[in-house]
Image 1 (cartoon, rainbow, N blue to C red):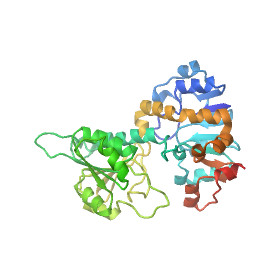
Image 2 (tube, helix red, strand yellow; image 1 turned 60 degrees about the vertical axis):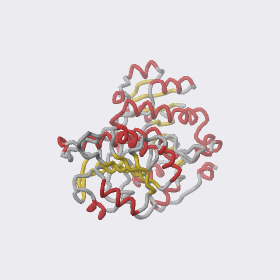
Image 3 (cartoon, helix red, strand yellow; image 1 turned 120 degrees about the horizontal axis):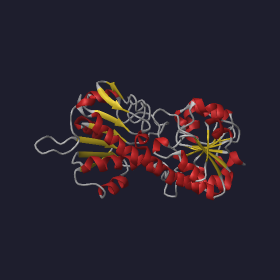
Length: 370
């Protein structure tokens, strides 16, 4: 198979889908790999390293037009629409339920698309979300440390335990991979950490991974309101179902918060768990709503591109090899967990969540292929 690795064009996106080691693995499996010129520079990988791994360095047109599969990091953006064509395989983070325009393009062009974020494992977890979730959670706390500084118009709090002064309170919503990542850093610096989740099993798991300065609370309306009143920083790490009504923190709730508090929304679901969230980017990350500063950057891991690229390549490579070796159809038929990642198949929408969100016709992956 001919596999194309393009340079990401999203604002301040420095990751690349595969390291030179990953490219070499694809080449060793008998596939031809096209890497766009300077695709890896943002993560510290030079074209020469990809050449030594067996890749061919090409321009943007060539990477898209010569490839059977496009292996990338972020969703398909408008400048990339022109490259979409029938039977082209796209393997990336798609988040189609957040992008109607892209969804329509992929359907119209009859693209075959597999999304990282929807592939599951036998435990019902999302192995291609996990590595980026941990980095996003930790990066979210690092952002909080940055934007609470006075030089960034913050409240001037150092998010750490300092003798003789009040210990900051960091409230984390969600005890999954992102929440744990944020909590590990926040708790290790001595902050009082409050973690909220409705999954008691997750809270029990987290209990044994964090020090005693982390308080674990069942997430209900009363505990959420009580926590946000105390919070110096709120970090939302809860992935919000797009079909779910309501929110966990409403616009009116912001009036209960300290005026100096900061919201870090790692999940970046617009109008999601936090009603007032809307995605921002690294160039202009902060906005104010109801007097409360919000940081809602939707590609936090890009700021830690070297680490993120290595982690992402490690996680996605075996699936890229699977597609290249056996094809999408065989992979979907023979692997029920991989099957969940098929979002688009030759003009058919095979991701139920996106179909419900946009009131489009849904067809099961196996039925679409048959």
